Structure formats: structure tokens, C-alpha cells
Length: 334
Ligand SMILES: Cc1cc2nc3c(=O)[nH]c(=O)nc-3n(C[C@H](O)[C@H](O)[C@H](O)COP(=O)(O)O)c2cc1C
Image (tube, rainbow, N blue to C red; front, side, top):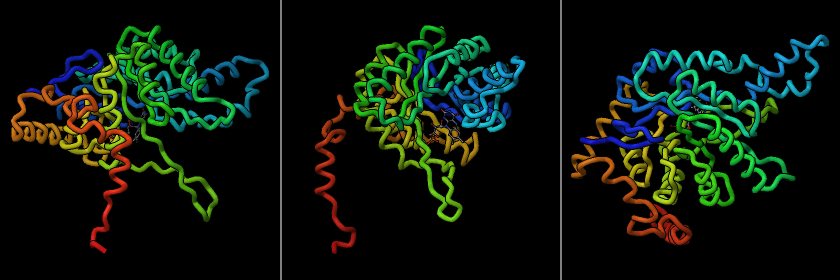
């Protein structure tokens, strides 16, 4: 069965990619992921704050009066909080490249254009085949309007585009007032891929300790539909290839994402939960499903349920919202 796909300009044997996270930290896991059929591997992110912290600390060390940015520095997470420091990160890119043959995608995460983005070039020089830029930002400043925030993100993407020769993917959150418009503006800056969507960690409150709880729950398939809707809406409208991230756990999840228009799917929670070899199970089940449903290839069905191709485009739009609210019935008929 032909599962091949094109993502970020790479011809990949299948669309399954372990997404950004701890999976690529360990070389043995990286090897197992490749053996299980991973088509490419995304590394965890190097964060703007890490790079800024290191630069501030280096500056402080070279100043006779020592580190005088205590207050500014205090809201940066301590460098120990990160699995890999900036230099270790570059070294790890090299090590992964020596370990596997599949494309290795480095990742940067930040919110402002500026000096830290030179790490895009350093990651490229370290051997990464592509770069994913995670633009996770929380719009908490009431004085800053949406356009300003979006313009800043676009400037950042443009800066990276001008810095590196390797393909660039932009990983987005869904929280934009006019997502389709923003995605389109981003697409015009020429990234090779858009990755939908960042998963936002929602805070809980520990009412006894009066603390904000920081807990990372792995996802499940219920997070996929948000991605399906926007993949379906963007499919066929933008130049960039599309990847789904968030809620991809089973072969049927992958098939839905591809039908909505995804060129690739990224998996993290499922592989953390079941181990790297689980990727081979999903791959096998996709093949089985395609055979049972008499598809000749995965490409054949890509986007067949996109907004432009599906028999009921209203299903992705406001009409569906109204119909769903009207059609709800209690399960027991009461
Ligand atoms: C433990 C953990 C660490 C993660 N670290 C990163 C990261 O460094 N950069 C990033 O862009 N996303 C990171 N993510 C988000 C994942 O790449 C992915 O987008 C998200 O988990 C949704 O996919 P999933 O449902 O397959 O887990 C992380 C996720 C987990 C669970």
C-alpha cells in the first residue's frame, strides 16, 4: 500500500511523524521510532527565554559589577528547568543526525523577532533538515490589539525564513480572531508547512495551597476535531503543506486528518503512552483500513473531506452549529 506523502518538500514514505517533545531526547528511542516507521522526527523546542537567559547571564558574567538584572531574570524559568541548554541542543541535533536517516526537524519556540532567532541558522548548521517554529503566545496584554500581535508573529516568521535555507514549518495555536485570514497572511511569507495546533496547557487551581497547578495531561482523540475543522478549511487554499498535531492516537485519527487535508500527522501523547513501537501498529492499521476500503493510496483520499470537496461543506461552518444544537436529544428519551 502506498502511504507516501509530501510534507515540507520532503517525499516521505508515510505521514507519521513523532512531534515535538521528549521523544527525541534519547537516541535509543529515536532509533526505535525510525525502526517503527517514523517518516521524520521533530525535536523538543529550544525556547526564546532559554536563549535570552543564557545571553543575559553571559553578559552579566563579563560585567565587573556582576549580574544586575535580578528582577528581569527572576521570571525566566531557571536554565535547570530545561532538558537541553542552547549548546547541548545543537550538539543533540548532530547526534540525532548521526543516528538516523530520516529527516530531523529542529524546533524553536518564541514570540518576538530578534537576536535569539539566529539559533534558526545554528540549528540548520548543526544538520537539521527542517525547522519548526512554535509561535505559542498568550495575548494577555489588554493594550495590545490583535493586529499588532499577528504582525509581530509574521515578522518573526519572515525573519526566520530569511535566515535559513532549510524548509520552515510554523506551529500555530487556534486562538486567533480570524484564523483563516491569519493563516493566509502567514502562508504568504512562504513557510513550507503549517502545523495545527499547539496544545494549550490550562492551569488548574490548588484551592488548599492557593497555588496555580501546573499539570501536563496527555491528550486523547477528543482533541482531534478542532484540528480536523481547520485542516478542512485550509486544505487546498494555501501553498504550505499541512500537519495535524493534537489528538492523533489511532489509525482512524490519522485517516480523518488526511481526509481533512493533512499531509502529515504528528503524534506525541500516543507514543509517550504506548511507547515508540506503537507507531508501527498505527501504520499497519492504516494499511489495513485502506485495503478494506479499496483505496489505492493514501494520497488518493487526502482532502476528500475538506471544505471544498466534502459533500456537506456546511458541516464545517455555522450551519452545523445551529443544527447540532437543535438535534440534541436526551439518551433515555426522557
Ligand atoms: C511532554 C511534552 C512535551 C512537549 N514539548 C513540546 C515542545 O518542546 N515544543 C512544542 O512545540 N511542542 C511540545 N509539545 C506539544 C506536542 O508537540 C504536541 O503538539 C501536543 O502534545 C499535541 O499532540 P498530541 O496530542 O499527539 O500529544 C509537548 C508535548 C508533551 C506531551
